[in-house]
Image (tube, rainbow, N blue to C red; front, side, top):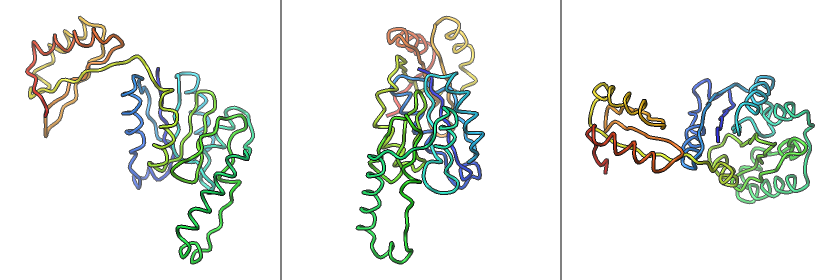
Length: 244
C-alpha cells in the first residue's frame, strides 16, 4: 500500500510549528507494513490543497491530510476536499452533538477562562464536513476528522491527529516487512557491499548515517524470508553491533 502525507499550515512553512505529524504518521504507517512515498507541506491555500489531493488520490492508495480543519478563517482543508469530490459541506447530527458536548465539557473544566474571554463557538463551522464522507468523531478534542474514498483528513493538533489515526490504523496494514542492522562502519566503507546486495536481491536497502551513534542499514521487502536472507548476507560482510 502506497501512502502520501500532506500537511497543511502556514505556521509549519514559517517554522513556527515543527512538523511532527508527518514523522509520527510515517513511522506508524511503515510499522504496519505500508509505504510512505510522498510527504509535502502546503500553505492554507484552498485551491492548492484541492489540486494536490486530487492528483494524489489517483496516484496513491491513500492520502492523509493533517491540519486546516476547524472553524477559524484559515481552516480550509474540509472545503478543499469537498471541492475535489464536488460535494457541499454539511453538518451531521452526530457530529454536531459531539462538538456541542466537547464544548460543554471544556466550559465545565474552565469556567473562569470561558467567562473571562467570553468564549463563543460556531458549532456548525466546526462540525461541517463534506457530504458523503465517513465521520471520525474526535475523542481527544473539538474538531472531527473524516474519510472520503481514499482521502483521510485529520486535525493538525498532534494529540488529536494521533487519536483519530488510531481509529483507522488497521486500514493501513500492508505486506512490507523490514529488518535493521546497526554498524560502526563509516558509510563510505560499505558502498561496494551495499551495491552488490542491491544487485543481488529483490529488496530495498537504505543506509542512514548517524554521527553520534551507529549507522543503520534498513532492509525492506514483502517476503520475510527474503529480508532475513539479505540481512544475513550483509551481516557476513559488514561489522554489526547490538545497539542495546
